[in-house]
Structure formats: C-alpha cells, structure tokens
Image (cartoon, rainbow, N blue to C red; front, top):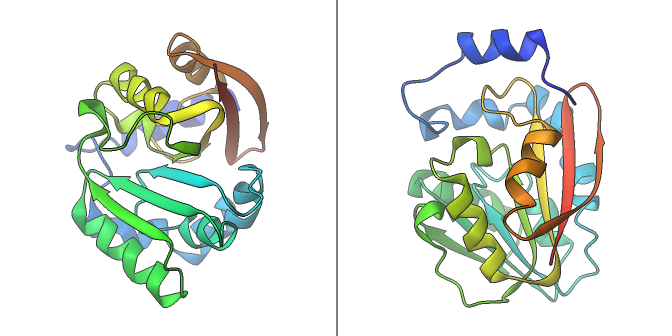
Length: 198
C-alpha cells in the first residue's frame, strides 16, 4: 500500500520519544480490533509453512502472530528475538497458555547481530518492526546471514503504525542486502511483502 496523506498525518500525531513501541502499551497490539485488522491466520499462511521449518520472528511484541506460527510448525521451531525482554515475557505467556513448547526466546538489538549460526532459518518474519530498527541495513545483513539460501523473508506492515514502510521502501532496503522480491499482498490496512534470500 503506498504511503498516503493519512500515513503522513499518523506519523506526525503518533511520533514517540522512543524509537520502538513500548511494552507498557502492548495491550494495544493485542486488542480485538487490532487483531481483527491484522488477521494473524491469514498472515501466517503467507509464510508457506509445511510443519518442520525453523522460523525466526523478529520483534514479536506480545505474540500477536506467534501462536499461529508455532502451531503451523509442530515438527519445527520458532525462535523469537526482541529488543524488550518484557515483550518476550508477554509472548512467552501467550505461547505457553496455548500449549506451544517449540519456541525459544532471545533479547538484543538486531542491528548488532543475531545470536544464531549461519543458514539456520527457513523463514524470517518481521511485523511492523523494521521501521523501528536504527540500523536497518545491519539488521537485514544479520537476517541474511542466518536465513538459508532460498529461505523467505516476510514483512507485514500495517496502518496506523507511524514507522510503516511502503513496498518500495522495503525493496530499497532488502534487495541490496541480498534478497529478491517475490510478491506482495495487501489491503487498505496491511501489506505482506515477501522476499527470497539469494
């Protein structure tokens, strides 16, 4: 979805003093309205999971998509990585409450590197995250390193996130980092943009 005047207005009104969404407001991300607009089952379908993949979820927040992903990989593993340990605690409670045990939790700054071996993951998923990362190029270089060749990098960007990036902006970031644009699906609220790792 292209950037609109409404996006510009939202960015000005919702500009925060911190570069990331604070964990104290996580309830907003998991509200029934936000969940309905985000449609986690539909987005999880875009990961093309068959059941045994290893998935990296960067910036899972309180776990809006996490249960949907973990349930689709009963023979695989979901590794979550977030700047805020408090967000990981919220996601952990949600996943454990749903009976998902195939999940690992890691805290740190993605721009400073990811604590995983090269070619570990089949999928990397970032929902409303990359716009908040200070060094986007370094983050995507780290993702490229840990994603297997041919693996999928999936972004979900949605309104009214003030840091939302357009499809064109995502391509300008991902393609120089070694990713090839695959496709995009979207509506007025959300874009799901997929790349493959070269």
